Image 1 (tube, one colour):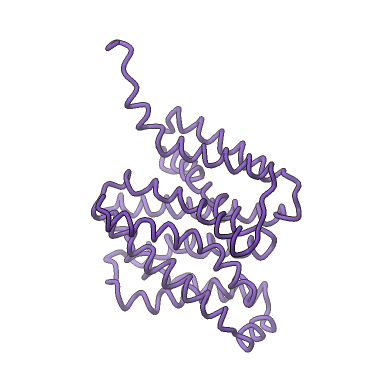
Image 2: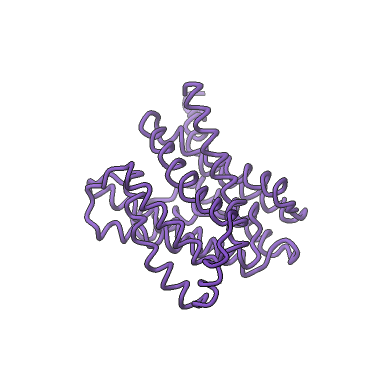
Length: 299
């Protein structure tokens, strides 16, 4: 990878890691479902000016957008509004890789390899330690549960993405941008039903510069720029070389949340976080290590 592209990769990881701090700031002025609806409305209206409409039937836009755009962020934003710290959220959300393996096995009938089973077991152990750490000062059970629902929704979106690709379509950044026209509808309806018209009106009337800055970052930086650059890197290098870079996101997320939000993580949660990262590393690199082990017959 060239120095320029390596710098771009580091920028993406930083943008996506700090993204969780920005979400926390955005939630200070707006309820989670309203924040999500406005965010994707901005993504669609701005992004569609720069990216071509994908040659994919609209039914697949909906099938993709509902789990990965609406459900994932409805659960994530709500989780952070109900007591999930930004730093831990950036880590726990990476459980999507484990859910993707399980859903691919159950839905697409893809085989799970031995090292992946071990990786899942290690990561689940880490998530269990985080969940039962009993540190209500830094995390609530509701917040953690909603984060897991967000990770599962992301994984369902990944399965839909794979299905779209298997049908011969290009499920790239163009799909992400144009399918963003779909989630504002369920977001705004859910906001009206769960958050109420009074809170919606109050949030819009008292709309602040902090809310605007958060929405600009979430829509333009994290989504349009982030996924645009990610798509660029994937077009130049093998996916196996680019995908592991996302493991840096929770590291940036935890660090930035500690600095900018003064978040602290308990000792038990650090142990759980270490196990989750270990499981993710095993899942990402386990296949390569296995291929490098010499065959016993050649010794």
